[in-house]
Length: 251
Image (cartoon, rainbow, N blue to C red):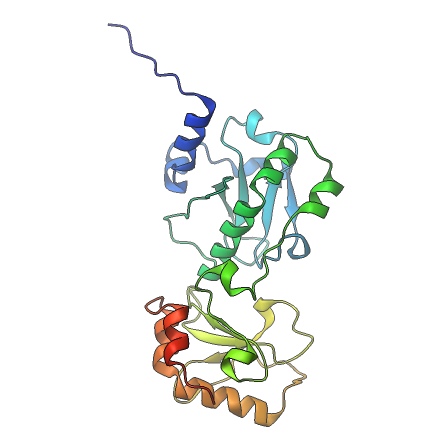
């Protein structure tokens, strides 16, 4: 008995592909990190991201016979491996455990979503590198609406002298904490100063030069102490940003 062949239109195929998880891609053998050398590496100045992203700039996805995707560094070292995320207006969140922070994964998904059309044109060689880099829309970490529950507290909201980020604690080396810019020399969120969330907050990685005064640091400490319980809930993903704002204590 002859097998029945089901033909899908290009749009139908795209819809199916977008639902494929990274686990499935690996199981089917479609994952090929050796093609990484054919991809363009995007820096933070292009993406706004704290993790490396590699994009197809010459039709590699056609040669290797897989959907158009970007490779994302699964960590913060150049030695860390990469994993693919299919390019789409609604990119799928990986189910497997990753070695990057939840906040960074959210930012990557947003970057892919808002640049999906541009990434597709770049891969199909319809635009030059210079055009791509000029039109590429980076993700701004300080935009609450963009990062959805990223828990970014601006001074006008918290009453503190600097912006506060509530780290979700997804990195294997540490638990929930807050991060703040203690020095103007700290240009990336990864280098920002960390403070533990407890009744006895500790500064983990103070810079050599701190631009904030002792009084400013004391205000941040008191803020953490006054909001310890709900800060931990936000860090664990058990309380939304909006709910946090309703019960937050300004110091």
